[in-house]
Image 1: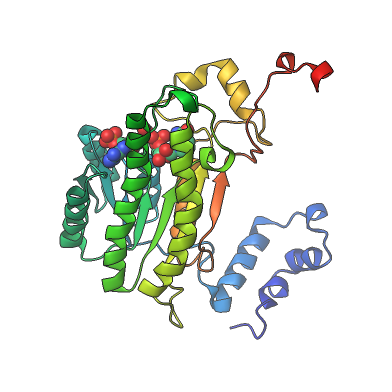
Image 2: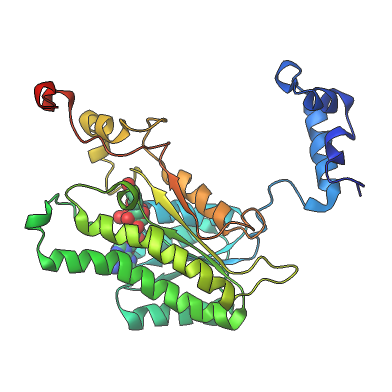
Length: 324
Ligand SMILES: NC(=O)c1ccc[n+]([C@@H]2O[C@H](COP(=O)([O-])OP(=O)(O)OC[C@H]3O[C@@H](n4cnc5c(N)ncnc54)[C@H](OP(=O)(O)O)[C@@H]3O)[C@@H](O)[C@H]2O)c1
């Protein structure tokens, strides 16, 4: 064991340590052998293996795992060695196909998440099978595809969207919190949207519900989760964070995102002007769910959208400089 937590930097291969300490790493690329020695030296400090998520054997419930982002997330957790619960509503074939493909200890469960009784039954079924739930990924959600200004949004649509996005998230985290209270362990990730951060003209219902998840919900629950699952010397305590995907290509929107004008519009304010991939969200969810990698992170809202700064509101030809 090293006497200093930083000793791994200079113990081992001189070719690695010397340039690192003099800030000249880029001019003196270390050999593969040197890199491996550095990694081994780091592992010798007692900090554990390099970037081990420690998710092996954890039970992870992914809601909406019959859809694009949820499916990629379920796959990623399975690759980390987690036992994955693949939730679906109507996409039974996709969910069961995924469970078969995972080949690990996975389970498909159906629930309409806006219905209290169905959510309760889903969590009960998971507890019967596994006896614990370590992580909940609140990913299920939908939006009304028709773009409507506020004065044209029917109350019925408003209620449906708020139910599908926000009420379903509430029912899912509420049921999970009851499990957490009993097992005194657990963390969650809410999948919100950049619509909640920057707004989304034509989709007030969706943007409002996602903003509630990304801010009020996650910041309130960070203070409650740690009471349900208190920290100890070995355990970080119950945590919750939110991810806000930008436009992400999934089967539902793949055709729309082939349209060049749409791609230009939605990437125009991004430092990395690419459409997100479901795996980008999956990687963020895995990181935030790891009590090792994200031990000290809770109540945060992570925007995964290539450095997006907002919406492209006007085309140049729409702007009249004489009235500006
Ligand atoms: N893709 C994007 O560009 C994007 C951007 C920002 C945020 N998001 C958010 O990311 C999440 C996943 O989106 P996605 O693009 O992967 O969508 P998707 O492919 O359409 O999948 C949506 C999933 O949610 C489930 N679901 C929807 N409403 C439900 C309800 N009331 N009860 C139970 N399950 C329900 C669906 O189940 P069934 O299909 O089985 O019915 C499906 O598994 C959503 O919350 C979405 O708002 C997506």
